[in-house]
Structure formats: C-alpha cells, structure tokens
Length: 161
Image (tube, rainbow, N blue to C red; front, side, top):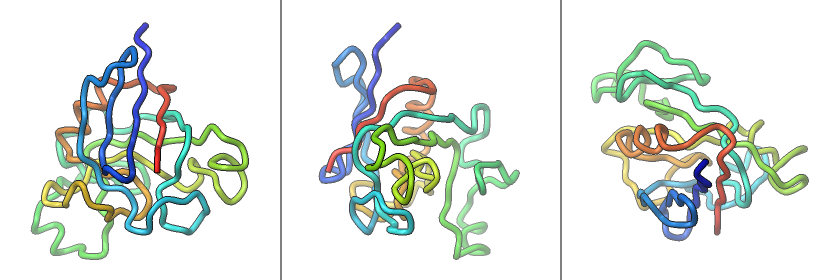
C-alpha cells in the first residue's frame, strides 16, 4: 500500500501529491480570497491536517455541475454561466475534507467538514495561482480528475499557510 499525502500551499497556490514522500504531481490551485482561517462563516481556507472523508462524482462527465454535492445533470458552459451568474461553480468531482485537529479544524465553530470545504473543479477559465475561492481549494477539471483517480478516502491532506 502506497503512503499518499496531499500538500496544499496557500502562499504558493499549489497542490502537491506525495507518494512515499516523493512529489509525483504538482498542480496550481486557487484557495480562499479571504486568506487562511478555520472559523465558520469566515470564507477562509482552513489550515492544518485533514483527510479525505468522501469522494464524490466518480464517473461523471468532465464539467458536470454539482450542487449540494449532487450532480444537477447540467454540463458547465459559458451559456449556462450567463444564465446563472450567482453560482459558485463546483464541477466534475469533489474531495470533501474533514479536519483532524480537535479545536483547530475539527469540532465547534471551526469544523472543516461542517463548513463544506472541498477540493473541487471549477470553470477552466477561472484563474489558478490566485486566491479567489470562498474557502475551498479549486482546481482545473482535468487536473482534478487525475488527482481523484490517484487518491483514496482516508488519505491525509496538509494545508500550509
């Protein structure tokens, strides 16, 4: 069994997949516009140790739209975006995170799982390498599909500031 770890660097806006301690993939990401933080309602990306609690979207087509962690049957397009300018697009796949540090990113007003913090896809024209999300970690869809196939529920995630 391969030891896997996802490391997200908020300052570098980068996600690295480490297998047996070696970086086997590096992807640009977009974390929270509001910076790092753990509090509910902050719109910040939580720091520290997490794990993948649930993988959602296996088998969905590229750019499938998810709302409330369920596929809507829609496929993202510029026309769909024009029809729904208020949406924060969650596309293709979701890796739903849960915090592992009680009182920091787990439990109470700082619970990553209850804050619905994901690693997820977003429209391909969305900038990577710039903090623009509402707290989640956004990835390009093809990058996310590749990562999704390489990780398992229970794999650890470290988010560094």
